[in-house]
Image (cartoon, rainbow, N blue to C red):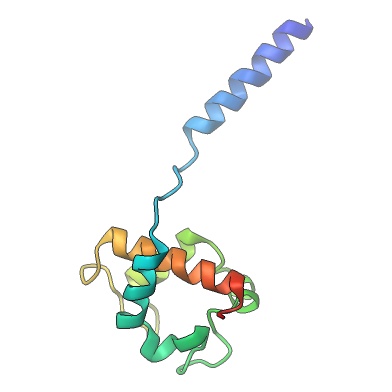
Length: 111
């Protein structure tokens, strides 16, 4: 019985890995350059010149559920309110790189 339970649990664990989205291979150095060119006018140093409370700082990203690579990628691709959509202007890889850069800088306190 113990072997059957172990086999079931192992099978479930392996199956769950099949549905996990693979980690995206982001280049934060590239993301920094893309951010500087496309985002810094409104978000220099993690700030937000349009909506002051919606910064790119860790606490604000968490408060507004923007503290994941997927959420930031979606925001950059589609835009929202005053933020333009960058889908079609930036490649998927560039958007991924800038999202990883934003998360990295937020974790560092935008220093």
